[in-house]
Image (cartoon, rainbow, N blue to C red; front, side, top):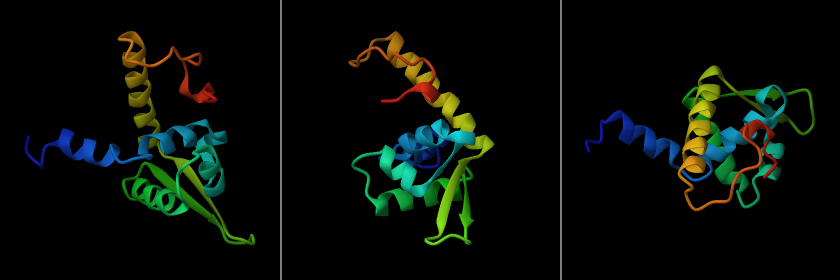
Length: 119
């Protein structure tokens, strides 16, 4: 596969650890928005450094929009999924449906909509 292949480039980007899970957590937030600290709390094991780097990458790709509340101490950063990010959530849901249908070694999911998932 050539390095310029769209699939190759996309998999290299989205295949980075935590990338899709961050997108799903933002999807679960009110108006698809969470503060940095909320994302970190929802993803045990992720470091602040990695989360910051991944959110910056998502922002650069146009999947996430960052808003800073400068009038607060400490300054709060809110992250919201863009239309492009919401489109990717649909792809993630398709992957989930595929995995459940073909019984890839996982347990059945009780929440058909990832938005309702609490795991």
